[in-house]
Amino acid sequence: MAIIVNVDVMLAKRKMQSKELAEKIGITTANLSILKTGKAKGIRFDTLEAICEALNCQPGDILEYTKE
Image (cartoon, rainbow, N blue to C red):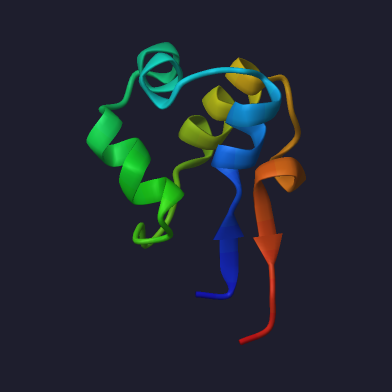
């Protein structure tokens, strides 16, 4: 996948567990895991906004584009 999701990096920087983030943004830990492993086909803007708000970051802090 050309888009890499770096949620784990931000979670570590914020000293937050995946379960806590999932609860804050209103998704299941299973769905958060799918997003973190790059298996998601897409992400809704409201989910991305909630992640950025919970982690106090910008979308570019958690999403990275690389050429395949």
